[in-house]
Amino acid sequence: MLSHQAPASNRATSSSSSSNTLEPLGNLFALKGFEKCKLTTAGRPMYSSEMKEIENMIVVGIALIDNNGKEIKDFNHVYLSTHRMYFLSHPESSNNARASLDYGLTCSLSIVERVEKEGGGLFRSPKTKILMRTKDFASEFVISFRKGKRDEFVDCIHEQLKKKKWLESLPTVSSTPALPSSSMTSSLPLVSASTDSLESMNKKPKNFQTSTAGIAGIMKRIDEENLEERKELDEAFSDLKKLMEKAEDMVNLAESFKNKIVQRHKNVTHDNTEEENEEENQMLDFLLNLGLTSPVTKQSSGAQYHQQLARQLVDFLDNIVQERYGGVITLTDAYCLYNRARGTALISPEDMQTACSLFEKLKLPMKLRSFESGVVVIQSSRYSDTLMANKIESFIREGREKDVMSYCYITAVTLARFLNVSAVLAKELLLSAEASKKLCRDENEEGIRFYLVSDVFDPFVNY
Image 1 (cartoon, helix red, strand yellow):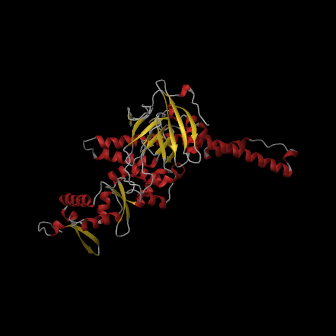
Image 2 (image 1 turned 120 degrees about the horizontal axis):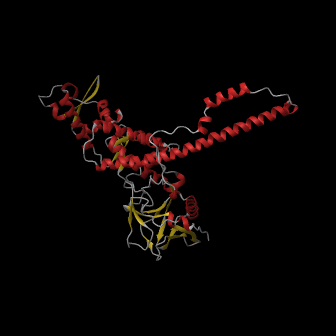
Image 3 (image 1 turned 30 degrees about the vertical axis):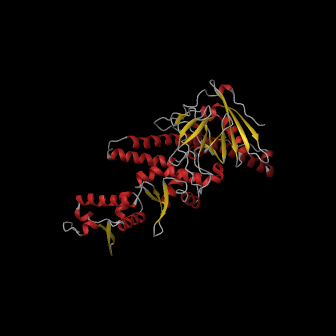
């Protein structure tokens, strides 16, 4: 039996203060120390960016058993982060149409006192018993791993209990950029080069020694140079490690900023000025460049990699596509945006397309769509061809009120500029509006122009 005993001084007395997405569980199950948690749009846990919470592992095909030995139905996935365990309800395969629950169960690792391996064998699933303790209660529950990975999960949770990331707080970042440290400035090439040149000028010629002569002397000088280079590399990598730690803090800070901006869009009812909108767009571009805090990887997701990738894609693209691209974006543009946010943990185009093809099977609020020309786009569930056709019609009418001669028709380039999409996608949207009988087109040597059908027979409209 393998167990882990946490020091009493490090146990938290309460786990409900770590996130504002948690709700009391009540007496629904015999699970003390558990809370309900809200999920993202795609049904993934809402990790706390303020606490620098990062996803570590996902295990599917589990069963959650309470204090009384009763199996709690539906919760078949466990997500392990640096701070908590999350139990969610997902279809175990993309062919299963069973609806997921709109909430999850979670418990904090800070109150876990002991983790033990149990059971296993020829006809029994391996299990893990977890004991939780605070000053108010002691409770235990069991996780049954029906599809394996019990040992990997136990090793991972032991590692998180040793690190105790929940004890770390988000460092404060000053408004003015910090100056480079002395160790960093000393490793800059320009400074080191000038220092070396001064030292070489001030050095006195060494007296001849037999130990420095011949092949043995050459080998000795090479060893000394290698030692000096190794020392410089160690200093450089130590500075790089500090820089990466700061970068991780900045990504977490950016994640909290992004959440606040999204929340502001949902709550604010007054119209923003053009300057405020421009500032928010610039901030969103900046945050997008900083990237994701917990990108889905094959190592953490295992066989569920494409399903989890599909869910994270929806969470990442949902607000971007709706707010900035009118509800539709080409697959190529989405691939570039998502990979830029992942940083070094890049995904292949094949993985991207496979994940996007699962949107509808997983009942996510996006879908993959192919136009007749072969252009493939990701489309929000809130988008429709009728709404887009009405939007194009409003744009033409509003433009015509300003300048009759310039706005009695519209081209793909003009619409692309208006919707912030590529000209290829803009043309497809115009053709879809034509199919809905809102527009008609005129093809000539200057290209294709689209007109409102209602204007073609209006004698008061000048062309």
